[in-house]
Amino acid sequence: MSTTRFLTGITTTGTPHLGNFVGSIRPAVAASHTPGVESFYFLADYHALIKCEDPLRIQRSTLEIAASWLAAGLNPEQVTFYRQSDIPEIPELNWLLSCVTGKGLLNRAHAYKASQDKNLAAGRDADEGVTAGLFMYPVLMGADILMFKAHKVPVGRDQIQHIEMARDMASSFNHLYGEHFVLPEAVVDDNVATLPGLDGRKMSKSYDNTIPLFSSRAQLQKLIGGLLTDSRLPGEPKEVEGSALFQIYQAFATEPETLALRQAYADGIAWGEAKQLLLERVDQVIAPMRAEYESLMADPARIERTLLAGAERARALATPFIQELRHAVGLRSLVQVAQAAPTKTAKVAKPAFKQYREADGQFYFKLLAADGRLLLQSTGFIAPKEAGQAIARLQQQGEAALADLAGQLAVVAEVTAQDVAAALQALRADD
Image (cartoon, rainbow, N blue to C red; front, side):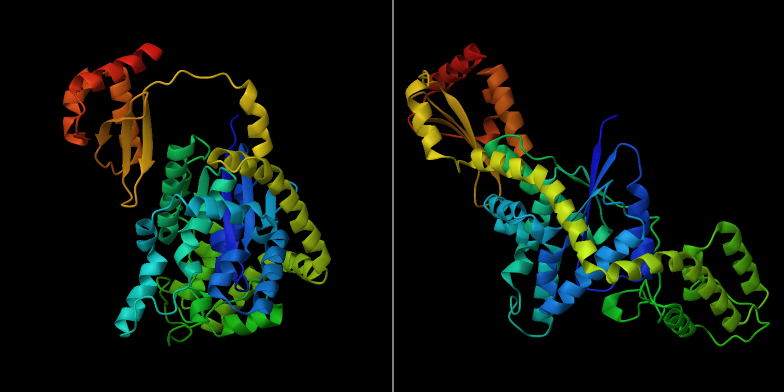
């Protein structure tokens, strides 16, 4: 059975809440047990620096999130679970990718544009308060994904653009230096539940309306007691649509239990009774995990050992891969070059196609004669694949392809059609 790699990152800037558990942690832990799937989960503490300037908060969040995932059943022996900052190859890959990523691509990133739009709406300079970290965020995310050759990346719809940008970076690098990266695909599950918060809006740290995942039972009772409900009295039928209480219950209950509460709504259940049912149902799920969470939080060294062991597994893949990439771009030992030079067999010069990307973000190619003269120059292609297909046609069909591709080829002064035809013929003869 072929293995598919899934990769998920968790930014370390807050305390996990019930919405995180239902929308991310629970389905991810379940997916980690799928046959034929190799799962990578990492704590994105480098990314956290873009959003948070409180060192203690980042450290505390890293501890809480790691403990939450482990308590929820993530088995570090079955998956690769690591802290982003423990993998030094990732920032190095970040730099390699930044050297093949067009600024125009980053200009279109949603987070960057949103910051600019907010500034302009307030009458400020478009880039006020925008750090290079925020601007380069998609490149670091690309490095996270491409380092481990992830095939699938589960994301929300608002993150699809980042996966597409990672694909673009991988394609640009592969185009220049050969096939090294796997092109990742975004996985969007529209069936993943989104929980409402205490005020009825989406449960989010941004709205300060969350129910922390591992609240004590007393805290959980207090928070659930504060859930927003309407003014209908006991005995009056109640609507399940738009009811935050019902939606949270549904996310934790079985189908028969959900149907029973739906009927209770229709029969006019009192809000206090409904909240008590929700408390019992959520606590039934959370209580066993809460005990493990509290045990982990009381022993940070245990979590640290787990993360370092995960980093060791991750680096077993990252270290040789970054060496491969360093060699590909020319960051090589000079001693090896010097030793290899005397025994290297001299090659007869021949015509050659060269592919490259310009600052405008488009892809080009040119045909050089054996002596280095420019014989053929393309116009720009939007995608590297299109440029590669044009080269393939010229290599396979020779002079016959020139007429069909005339609109994508620029005239080169003092070069005759015979010169080009001869070079193409020489290439076909080598094949």
